[in-house]
Length: 387
Image (tube, rainbow, N blue to C red):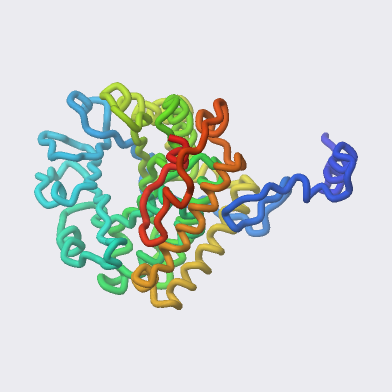
């Protein structure tokens, strides 16, 4: 039998090794996510039950290419493709959604967001047309844009809740069963797991406010924000970790953007998709409902993200809701402030991107003020400063 070791025993050992009394000031790592991260976890205050997902097994989504029908079961379509049978079809093009020839044997999911950040409005006519479609899920709540624009984890979840609330006010609570939440996953491995789990908690809590117990449908894709034009193989490594994080956290579908930012080829597209295949069939992480459950670290992060994003959502509601905050420029400014802070951390080397500011260390060619606009929410890659 192993002797029980207390937290105090560990602390005393670390104090002795570091030769200091205040070990937490040394071991606590600063972050931009407005949460507390401890160097050691021995419990979690309120353990969570497994957080369910909608799909029994995570859908591995590929862009359609000729000959893929035999081995690929979920497609992101850019153009209409006939004769697909027993597939999951994800549609991100509103023109395609209007004209697609649906097949009863397939399942269709919309990745079309009806919000316009530029005009601070909802395209209600488009929403009605999408809701009239015989899709499994008809409207997308796009959160990927905010991640790629530099929003932190709490902001991303809060904005998803606020957009969802706006939709329920127009179309009723039943729309909660018709939504896809599209998120982008970065390379902060455990934080991204916690973000996805916190989004599940927060959306479920919102649904209960309307008397429904809804599990959100989550479509996770690899981020552009941490990718670089130089040394593209590093993009491949980063996206592999991102896909793993998304699967472990229980996403319903995953998609890998091409690791080649410039001049992508059919081979690079195929390799990007097959990252998912390797992860799914070599480690079977796509079949678990909530594989990260039970990790004290991930549980603590999840609960912090969920609580703080809910509070942020309430603040948005108290100031008029998502669209009003867009019109006033408040949301744009919040994303801008956080994005610039992150960009400055990259410039200072606090955030390390191999092949960009580390091995080799490139020279910055643009400032943060040249990359970002306080009035516009747009995707900006951290490496653009050096390219």
